[in-house]
Length: 188
Image (cartoon, rainbow, N blue to C red; front, side):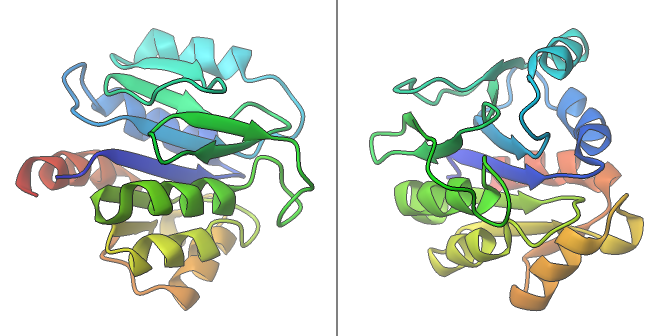
């Protein structure tokens, strides 16, 4: 059974998430944790926007907060978001990785260490290589890996980097991702 989903995205990511997250209904059985590269800007505006169109509660992750179904958690700007072995969050202001803080790789790697083969990792549109090493770690631990089809991405750079490094379980267009997530969480 899958216990969590992690998503990494940057350029074009808010538009991509606007297509995926509203399709996940209130009874979706696993939490979703997201790193969206937005620089040092606040998450407030797009979190309010997503809460208005989503059935799941969308919020900024907090240190020591338990990770629960029914929520979509975003990494706070300026902090690396990590998942601990007790399935709670921790935050770090350590140096940037891949020019980013928060780093997709750090979220993905710590999630893989905690959830092992009970994790789904998704790389969406973006303009750098962040997420590639983390997706490799998810694959190494037996988790499910999904990469957005780069031909359909606003910025194909991030999905292309991931595809060069990882043979994903699924390569999907945005409009296919939510249905695939429902199939995955119901079948394992």
